[in-house]
Length: 158
Image 1 (cartoon, rainbow, N blue to C red):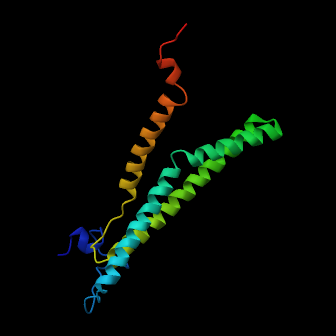
Image 2 (image 1 turned 90 degrees about the horizontal axis):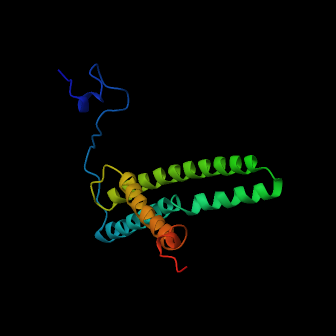
């Protein structure tokens, strides 16, 4: 009786269409060593682009939309309109960034497989966590040293 979820596509009553394990007639042909090295470098490049896009979430994108919202508020005189456009614009920009990251994650998996590495899962979660840590440290340093809390922590001279 076949009741193992890996055998039945997660269902205990039978397999969903199109979820059968892939069976090759023969093993896929491996690329040359030079080609695998090139694919490995390409995977590192895709990972770098993913890191850059992730870092944009932690400052540049929100700041850009705050600037757009402030300009709209100045031109129209309506704070509500500026805030609404800024919020909706930032929301759609961030969602577009997540879609781009997901595509890059799939490309990274494929390029790693082409490089000869048995890659089955993506790196989007770990990359997001790492850039969140970097963004948190950078924001805290900016807040304490340059922007807000720096002068209040220092003793006053008067």
